[in-house]
Image 1: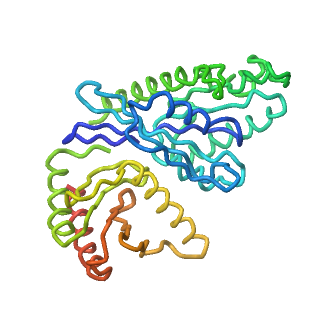
Image 2: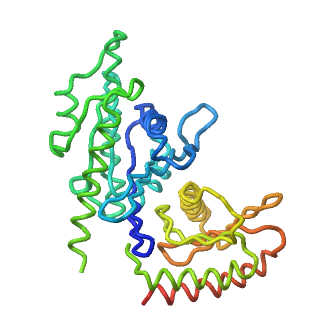
Image 3: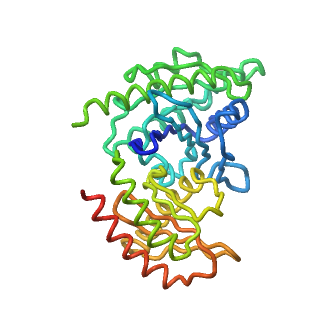
Length: 204
Length: 128
């Protein structure tokens, strides 16, 4: 859950990029870090293995400026996608306020996407959060692969596999080229802030 | 989690009086999700608080998992020693952690004594 400091008028909310290994979570964050330097007063933290795979997480705080008199800081995290790192994925999800699920459009990654979104649902349950209630945006990444002649899944198939029941906002994207990376971020920030506002109104 | 101005002022006072006053360079109260709740320093520290908080929370979480694997509830001492700067982590309750940065002019034993007093006072404050 976000932390609200009434003294300094700061809101800190946590958004996590989730998805199977090599789907482009880190590439999303790298693109945002590169394009939005003015809003980021910090170095990007990456805890990765020697082979450049995310071991724990990537992180930076994203300054949204003032909303209703409060300084809003969005903490952007990725999780390690590889199946074996589930315990670290769980740790990163602690206190999450919004999730971007990054799906890999490559046809041979279809099953990995399905396993990963189920894993997200299970891990959220550990923190008493329901995948149907938490702000969630799905990004169908790597649409650019088609140009290189690599077979990709059509959006209808991806929607059927991952979003048939959830019916959350989804975007086609290419993190490498930057297509719809910022749009995905804007949408998840908007949904997360709306959800926090709703929760605050329900507080006694 | 929402903390009011009075609570945050008192938290600042407790940290300043007991820790900064005893020579600790920088102290940060964070939650286990990596949010910074309060931070005070002696005026000479310019660390990147938000990154440190994210890593400290993750480090604490990883250590807790390691403790469970070896059959412990938790490791009570989380201390990283550097050449000039050291970091000491301390759990306040299930949600909050204290992260201290200090140099070699303070002994770890003295800091631990101070910390146990601070934790007691913070627990009381947070229960209000």
